[in-house]
Length: 133
Image 1 (cartoon, helix red, strand yellow):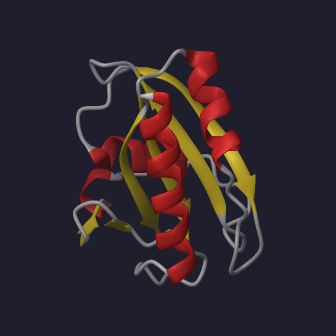
Image 2 (cartoon, rainbow, N blue to C red):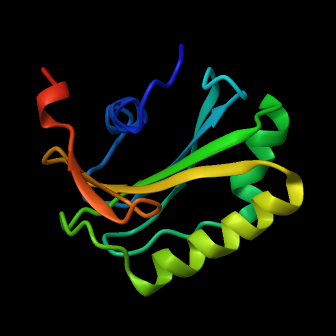
């Protein structure tokens, strides 16, 4: 399967949320052509936090021999704007990926109402029209 746009990755992981009242962080691991090498649940947190460490993000990337990763996590509150912790984690993951030559394509925050925020583009988007289920 190929990721043609960021919406595709949101749709894939939204369906994997086991408890929408807790933060879930996922990695979507890609080859240079955007083909999915793997999707991994990195962590499940609480209502307001999830622990994400670079080694937990990049262990699957190395296993799948991925060159790119998209990070995604839900905010159970529905709030899409990144917290200061979200921004710090993104910077740390990006730096770690640069060392490993694995590009972090984007880091997305999504809610179950059909919206997501791209931390790279710094803009809110809607995926509701794509989600027919």
